[in-house]
Length: 398
Ligand code: HSE
Image 1 (cartoon, rainbow, N blue to C red):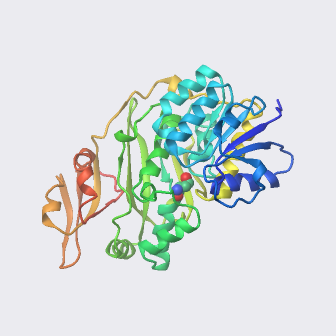
Image 2: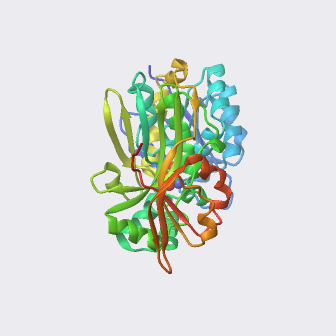
Image 3: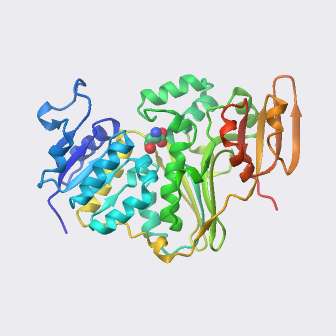
């Protein structure tokens, strides 16, 4: 059923402006942006100032506005806006993965209580419609795993270093200039943004609510020329790959780690700001989704799709949560890693169960071996301070 949509928009940054362009160019779909709430009074805007307000209640208290589109940076402020809007019976579309991942349980409950639509396709993998697919296509599928490249900025940096020989620092600056990176880019390069997206995917794929503190994340901020050279010599690329998968009928595991990808793999050619998602399932087998993961227009297109879904009162049903087959999660799993290290004392903190390669040179040392993920979790805080780099080899073993 077509509803007359009156939008209240929060935020007019990269995604907000992207949405504005997308809405202006989309034929056959009309949604009026009634008001845009922004924070910075001094910033020059592309639109006349009469479209803007600095007061959130101007939008939240406007009875004519029936859909809130939340595209601001501050996750706590976003949470306050989104929950107030839902309590007032307004539908909400958001791209804020941090806010969604940190408050997922509460937000899902609130949308059930208030009977509003709460949609967030743009929060996860930009233009790739992965949430809608998990909800609708895989609703009864036995999903073995979901993994991929969920963060455009870190992938952009890795591609710039690997394909063009750029330095980490310059590649990061470029990702920031192009509007791909978060305001605090540590979220991108330390695997935290990818972890938020993994948490959202986990709920839709397996029906489990996971806290950010329960997911191990290790990013790319410590990568060096040595690691890139090593990968090249072996015919691999290094990608930041979040993973969630089944250990048995009732238990899943998850983590975010850099991973070696060989050239015959789908993720090998996912470069720059592109994202890729691989779903493996019992009946559909292996499927690969590919698309732009960051940037104003790709994210704007996902927001538009959610806005359009609100016109027919689309809601996520969280079918996997209601099926209640997966009940537990565990991090007690073996993983084979490549560990580049500098100090022997750091190496000793890793309790390798077995070692298959041990390379030692004056300026470049590494070990390849199997460790338990719980071992990495135990020393997670120290990892950041060590002169090391960790890559999941991705090798399967028994
Ligand atoms: N900083 C995010 C990324 C933006 O680089 O993927 C899109 O979520």
